[in-house]
Length: 272
Image (cartoon, rainbow, N blue to C red):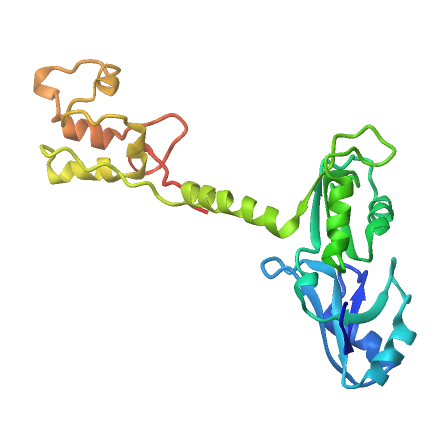
């Protein structure tokens, strides 16, 4: 049996740009005595999930707030206010991620289908700048049983009354865990400097800078000191009396690898 708070209210369908202070003003203007308010957001990006909570000191004030604010029009949203459920196992795994959604799907069409399986706290289809669905959407149900029913009914089937690809429905929390780990590894691989091979033992101290330079990774195998035929062969021979030492020829001329410029003919890698 679901248990509800006597004083804490959940407010659904908040405008995306609403702040905590604006939410407080809506309730305080109707029923003064708000104890606390909080809009639920992504911790990393600050993105609003479209719902929040408002708490009063007494059940009487909370009931008055429901009567005054529920179904109020704010911008293009109609607020839905009710007593919040107490935390329990039934409130876990209530968020679903839907993929392979048709490009023509609208926010209203998504919610009308998801409402058939239980009370929806919030749902959202991800849209591109032109307003077309990106193929991905999220839905937060009030109970786990509603989320399970939606997943069992929709997963692996085309969108109702269409010939779209089979919809994939998963718990959002599980899907995020699967996606984040590879991304973290990819980020580290791309943004951490690579270790450079040690210089050949016969190299003098003056020439070690070349092999410790980040661009040295372009050379698969270090050649003996002073011997770089791929560069030397492109330069015309010089009379013996004018021929400089090999290490001066290479370092003062600066190796110019295609597409890289800067000190020693290279630009430093940019790690963002």
